[in-house]
Image (cartoon, helix red, strand yellow):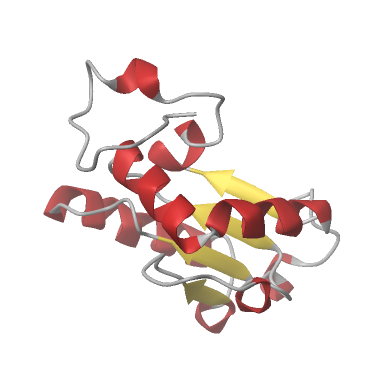
Length: 130
């Protein structure tokens, strides 16, 4: 929280649950949201943004943090590209926004997710895992 120059009670978060598809994964999305509330972020300052449509920068502008939850990394990469969220996130970070990734949400910002094939069954076929 020290990366953001304002009180925790004023921090606004975009919560991206898109990678979570199973009951167990959705449990962790709920847990993540509760943890944000427990540190003092207000419920009205947490906006859930599913990557089920083309995302515009206006949807994330004015927020301090993009928090991407875990789930299936291959599905998440597919939805990020489909929604144009990769470009939006880059713009957001250039404006000094903070990115927090949990599990798939952190793996996705690495250079290539192909090494996960032995561990995770892809839900979608990707042209590139980079």
